Image (tube, rainbow, N blue to C red; front, top):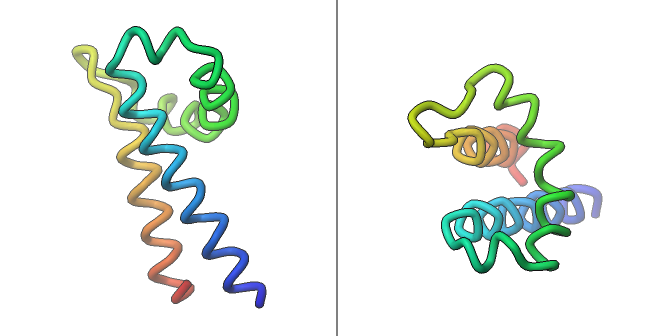
Length: 79
């Protein structure tokens, strides 16, 4: 039961991170209200990673690192 809920939450977070990353490439989307809400949800998770691996040459790897961490958690806990 708890594993199922945790797996669902991680999957939802993965989808939100992917939407955030894709939306960040499109100026019209980036300026929309739904994206602002999405940014408020995802940015607090990305900021600690950005402190360790700051964007270089305009390329932000923090979403990729966070996705890898989430997949690692899913694998380790067999979710």
